[in-house]
Amino acid sequence: MNSLVFVWAGLFVVFVIAEIATLNALVSVWFAVGSLGAMFLALADVPFVWQMVMFVGLSTVILIVTRPIVKKMQGRKYATNFELDIGKTAMVIESINNQLGEGRVKLEGTDWSARSEDGSPIEKGTVVTVKMVDGAKLIVARQSNAPV
Picture 1 (cartoon, rainbow, N blue to C red):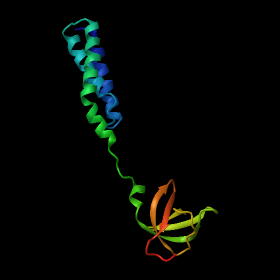
Picture 2 (picture 1 turned 180 degrees about the vertical axis):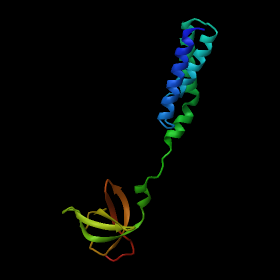
Picture 3 (picture 1 turned 90 degrees about the vertical axis):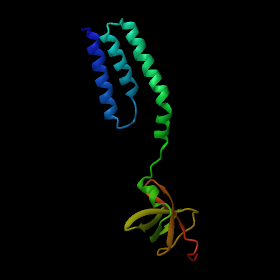
Picture 4 (picture 1 turned 60 degrees about the horizontal axis):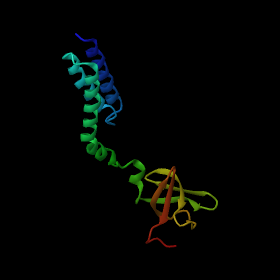
């Protein structure tokens, strides 16, 4: 048996392991399929040049065919925890003053650093709405029905 069969089989295993290790990132599946095709040519004692042509060609074809699927998968956005907080109401537990860098709110039992969306001060005890999350800070605004 041709020793290149073992080389292609080894490459196939390496590419499959790399694919599994990257958890659905689709980084080496094309090369795994290409090496499998080249391995079959090696089994048939086809010259190495044609094995390489099979590897490169099949990998390229699989890449082109699966590219739309990959783009669709990578284009998905998943809500993270901070995105789920946008629109929720919180209570100001330390007056918010953007100029002094002060202000804290309590959102669902968690104490957050906060800044006002429009830069205006917000007094302690005011109910606010979370408009954005900026790192570890909530950007908040007075609720429209709350007194100024």
